[in-house]
Length: 317
Image (cartoon, rainbow, N blue to C red):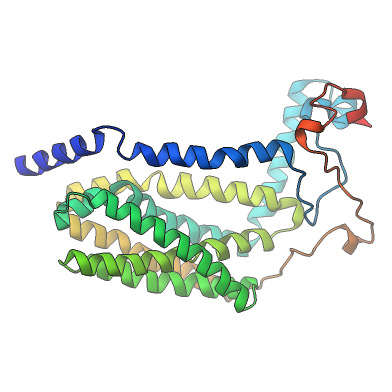
C-alpha cells in the first residue's frame, strides 16, 4: 500500500513539473483561433432545411414583440417548443439507439482518457506512459476518424451501412483493446492498443451521420446538441469516478481495465440492433416536399450584419 502511494506521488510530481502537458492545451488554443475568427467573418453554409428567416437575437424576434408581452411568457413559450422538439427527437428510434451506443462507447473512453496513464504506469512500469498514450490517442484518432469516413463513403453512406460499420469496428476494436491489456509486454500492448484505437475511432463519422440523417432538418441542431450533452452527462463524466470505485474494490489495475474494456462489446451490440431498425434517411427532406418553395436564407457574415452595426430596423425587415 505504501509502495503504491509512493508511485502515485512520483507520477503526480512528474506531471506537475514545468509546463509539460500544458503545451498541448496552449497549442490547441492557438490552432483553434483562426476558426473562432472565421466564425465571425465567413458566410454561413447553405444547408438543406434552412429557413429564409434572418438570424437575429431573441430580443429582436418579431414573434416575441408581437405575441409575448413579457419575458416570462417568452421563456414559457420557448420551453414548450423545446419540449415538443425533444418529444419528436426521442420518438426517433434510430436516433435513440445510436445515442445509447455512443453513450456506452464514451463511458469507456472517458476512463481511458482520465485513468489511462496511471493504468499504464501501474501495469507496465513505464515512466513516459503519458507521452505514449497521448501519441496513440492522437494517431489512432486521426487515422480512425478519416478512415471510418472514407470507408462509409465507399460502401454507400446509408443509415443501415453506418450501423454496420459502427458495430463491426467497435466489436473488433474491443477485441484488440481487450487483448492489449492481457499481454505483459509493453511493445505488444502498444501495437494492439493502437490498432484498437484506430478501429473504435472509425465510429466518429458514422455516428454523426446517423444523428443528422435520422431526424428531420429542423431537428438537426438539437440532435447534435443532445448527442454531445448525453455522451458527457451519461458517459465520460460519471465513468472515471465509477472506475475508481471499481478499482478500490478489485485492487487490480489489469482486472479493472479489462472489465471496463469489455463494455465496448455492449456498445457494439447496441449499434448492431440499429441495423435491423426501419430507418428513413431524412437528409433530403425540406419544404419542397411539402409543395412550398425554399428561398435563400440570409448569408450576411455576422460582423457585417445590420444587427452588429446597430441598425435594428433593417434587421427586422
